[in-house]
Structure formats: C-alpha cells, structure tokens
Amino acid sequence: MAQWASPLGEEFHTEVIYEDKSLFKAREPVWHKKDIQMNHIPDNLRDLDTDATWSKSAYHVRRWVFGYGLHITCASSGFPILLEADTASVSEHEVIKLKEEDILSTNTGYLVTDDGYTDFEKVRDYAKKGLLLATPATATRVKKAEGESYRQFTEQCISAISIKSRKAVIEPVFDLISRLLSTCLARRETINSYL
Image 1 (cartoon, rainbow, N blue to C red):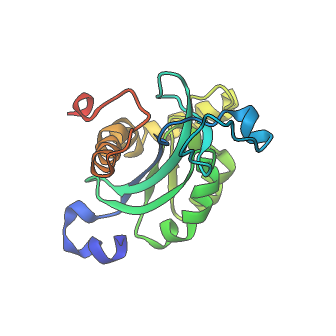
Image 2: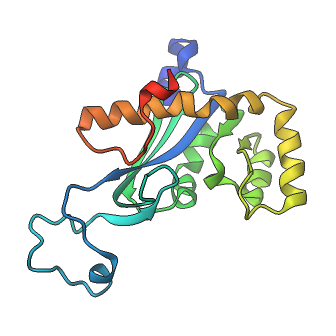
C-alpha cells in the first residue's frame, strides 16, 4: 500500500514511519489462564472466544487483556501502510520480523516505535540497511551505557521529534479502527487526549 500511495502526495511519504501494537478486548466472557492451560471450558461460559489470548498492556487499567493485538505501521500523516492482526500474546518482536522485508523495501529512513521494540541488535542490523530504528530506549532492561549512547544519538537527529510525535500520529488510527469495528480498545487514552 505504501509503494502505491507514496507518489500521491506528501501525506503518504514513508521517509518516517511509525509502528505500534494495541490490544483489543475479546467479547465477554473471559477465559482464565488456568482454564486455558488445562484446555477446560467451564460450563457457565457461553459464546467463549477460544482464539483470544492474554497479554500485558502498559495502557490498560487492569494491565492484563484477554483478546487480540493489532500491529500498525503508518506514515507520518497516520495513513496505515501495514497491518497485522493476531492474538494478544503475539509480541511486537515477532510481528516486526514478519513486516521487516516490506518495511525495508519502502523508501524509509526512520522507523519510530515505543520502548517495547527496543533491541540494539535490531538497531545495528537496520542501520546497516539504511534504516534508523528510533525508540525512547528508557526501559529498565536496556543496558545503561548502550541505552544512553543510543538516546544521545537519536536526540541529535530527526528521530527526537519523531519519537515525541509518535502517539499523536498512531493513537488516533487505533481509535478510528476501534470505532469502525465497534470494538473495545484496551487503552485508557482516547483520541481527545491527542488533539
């Protein structure tokens, strides 16, 4: 989609793209982990979504969500160029591997993500291919020296601006998709907090 739309106007350019995952709750009822592990469906659960899985969310009030994950890659204008839907437990790292070839084939210089995608091996690999993976790199699992060097580097280039604008670009896309599908977006924030 990105290659097709890029010549149509500046709002479709892919020099800077954004990647994020959002969790969407499955319809009630909830299938508890202990029952899933035993492959047991309690008698009182009707219309149970047996495909949905559990995942932890930094944005959801209760932190754990039973449902699905939507992984979006979009242009700076919020125009979606790659979408991947899977169960909630599928990680960002697994999905970015699936999208990697498509991302690297676009005319992209910066891939801006949140901390969940921070992986310095991936940063180095992408850099060799001409793509800067820009994340805040503030997670506690990030080695201090490596993380600090990386943060200083990203602050010296366009990615500092891009990292700050990531939520304003991608969150309204998640909100719109949620409204279109009449699903429950598993985030506390709404589109109003970004306008």
